[in-house]
Amino acid sequence: MNILAIGAHPDDIEYGCGGTLIRYAQKHSVYLYVATRGGAGGSPEVRAREQEKAAEIMGAREIFWGGYQDTEVPLNQNLIHNIEQVIRKVAPDLIFVHYRDDTHQDHRNLSDCTLSATRYIPNLLFYEVPTTQNFSPTVFVDIESVLEQKMALLKAHASQITKTNIKHLTILEGARSNANFRGIQGRVKFAEAFYSQRLFLQI
Image 1 (cartoon, rainbow, N blue to C red):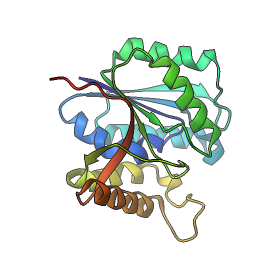
Image 2 (cartoon, rainbow, N blue to C red; image 1 turned 30 degrees about the vertical axis):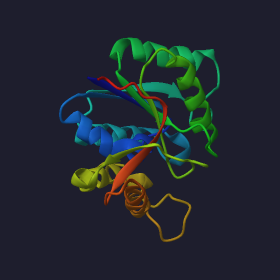
Image 3 (cartoon, rainbow, N blue to C red; image 1 turned 90 degrees about the horizontal axis):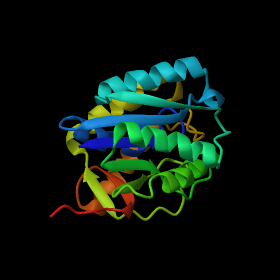
């Protein structure tokens, strides 16, 4: 089984579905598509190295870089085609991407372009990040057994740990609290939550 996770910036994927991807990588092939190197949030070279370290910890097979500028991810045919090319290479059975309702334009545009690029993919799940709005998840994954590994993914993005725009709150604290909240909703201790655009059940 091939899984493709799509994110606008380094650390988006790890926050939104890192625990789920760790679990998948234990038995399946996980690939990452990261649209930018996160230059608006620090050195793009540093952030790319952090993303590579996180991917290694996760067990991802490969990172595909979109090559777009941070804050300038477009809503256009070029990005749709870019994502379609990666889909042809990976042949994913399941794709994760940002939820469409988000205050960051890169997240919104990447989500909308992915929706077009994945129109023939049977399984598409949206994940949440701190800028996501109006998110009512319908799918939950228990990540209690890999929670500390998820924290290790986020720690790999060392330049971003305190960049939450919330005083005295680190990304680690935010991710742990969110996992606990989604776990309570899903009736487990810690979970990641998703909204399903399409979910095809193999019976």
